[in-house]
Image (cartoon, rainbow over all chains, first blue to last red; front, side, top):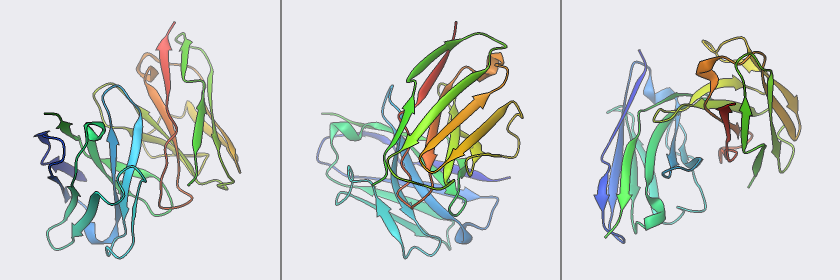
Length: 118
Length: 107
């Protein structure tokens, strides 16, 4: 059974950093592209970042470019999102999602809540 | 970047109704268009991919059509569990923008 489990969310002050993790199981992680998607309270889905299966191609939404860094460790079946210089508008549930190449996000984690507040 | 625009933003309908939601891309995306359903407090689930292909496990009352810039999601006969928010998303590039969502409510 495919499972994606996010962790690392919590309350953080503006300007500080946080690192999210996504533990994958039930599939060959190293062969799939992965993404982070977030959803602010009461708002829609916002795609945040993409990483190719090998990690050599990465993209970011303009709203996080230069502050967030996506990475993966295929040996540990894990996806990461390093979030620096956090702002109040980064408050959201963050989901990791498996990517079927040039296609849909077919599996999602349950999400982890990040709250940026003083 | 490709922008995705859905309409309407919200919709009221009754059980048994046929409902259509539209999605427009800011440039041609061929058939690289997906539809997701999200219930409150839950992660999204994919319904339709490649504009018109039904994802495994999605009910057959859901269908999609379109190509280029204009797409539609149709629910043939609304069921109580279909009242949720629906999102389109392009997969034309690795910057996978979503539409703003359409909230489907019970009339």
